[in-house]
Length: 296
Image (cartoon, rainbow, N blue to C red; front, top):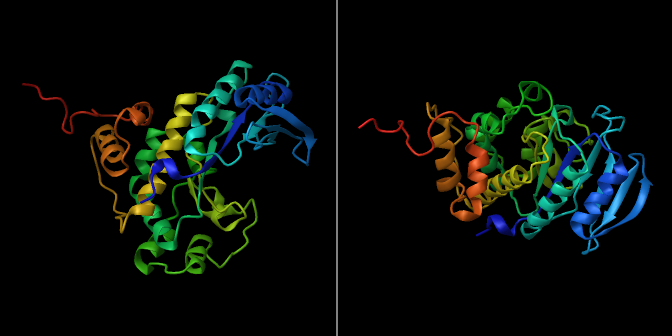
């Protein structure tokens, strides 16, 4: 059985408003590391090496407009383990203290979960789980309508229909369902990558499942909640024998989502208390009472 805590992940955080060297210094302070390179590659990357000799990259992101006279930057973490979440939160706090901002122009946070443990079956199960609950995920994470149309699109109906009806049994077949043709070496900016649940990275050198739903933020508690959510989804798919893709209508999204987090994904107890708060905070309804608080 694969647990939430046993999986590895990486995070991309878009920020704006301050000079890149200040962000790099904040990352170095948060990790206890040091700046080891500047102005690398075509992305003008600055590299911070942490105490475990892992590289954190702070690079140019041309999609982020100038703010306060500075170009936008993207912080790309190395491969992290669950125990590194606290350090990542410290990095986020240090970056925020520089005056950096993560507003709507910064678009999103992208979270990559290790895909090496997944099989065609587990990825099919994961796709069905996400599709079933995607409407609530969009609402819970307050994904802006413009992002839903462009960079964080809902799951492709044709893809999920093929997964459900044809049941892929090989990596090649799942790849064909995802791209519409066999594409074993997808280019970085392929059109299928712009979904909230993105499998394109599975067939690139990254071998990850990318989650593009979260809005850009420098709130360390929210970032931790997002990581825990996607690790929990991945773990559930790895351990499940089957899953339904059928969406369930509800007039109490807050209750349904909380029950899903606790009962289905195993996000119960104090460890996930903050995550449950952030993930249900913006949903309508009552998290404690399915049909509303009793009047008597």
